[in-house]
Length: 403
Image (tube, rainbow, N blue to C red; front, side, top):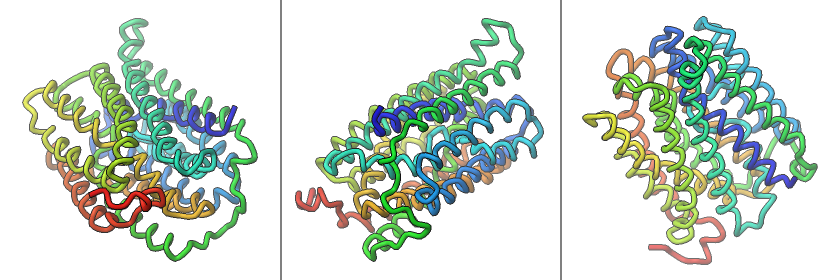
């Protein structure tokens, strides 16, 4: 099996697990009688653990070994899922979420992606890079969609086998852990060519790479802080409380959302070839944020769901384009570090915001995080366009200005 196929298959399985946990985590914690503030603490703890692992692989991943790093991260995540079944107190759940890097965002953005995205460009030609990242993200969002469907499993178990509520959730979390174990088994098959050519403890960036990377990282920090208010666990909890719908209904909603995400990645690659990577990132992202700001004011679940799905058809178009842009703007030997730094700042924002989002939901209004997150994303898009509209990757420099 080729390295590219292994990376895509492992990412797909991990995305199913992430999509499943993203939809169910907030609802599961609600069944444990956790408050919205408690739920925010747990989500933030899991993302903090993910941020720490991202920090480690950013600086040491190539030296420790890309394959070995992926194996350790996957094993820790699977163990965290199993431990979540047997813990119920807030402190214990926070610790388990931290060690197991439990992801309540509903989208896979952890340390494993840093390593995978550093390996992936070496498996294809430069002109195939954006399309390869698009397929990589399509498979992830297909996995997220299937994970959303699996989030209906507790309802099916209760109706078909007459198990109690907590047992139905425990069985579903066990499925989450099993999927992560399968991804670990796939990583074991990576070839030696997946490793960095000259692994080093420190990376000396070229001056141009340094300027671009740190400017991008500052902007990504703002975007990720906004995204931390909009994680799947919090959005699923919002729909669950605001419209009194059950887990099965929410599972269908997020299956449709992730399907829309997956389809949008093909559109992103097509659009980027015609108007450029930066333009694609910005001109699809701003409308998605405006749509999200309308969701809290919808008069019914059907209207809210429609607005949300329209948003999901646009919001992920910046993902493969952003990944391709970052990898294009640095040298091959800088890719692990560049991938790690940009993911690290994103994980930091995602880990920080849920701590506040839960308290805002409980203390102000259920929709407060949605409005804050969408507004911050619009600010990010405007700043990104202003800073990078004239800085093009190599393949675009030959095409001239788009408009």
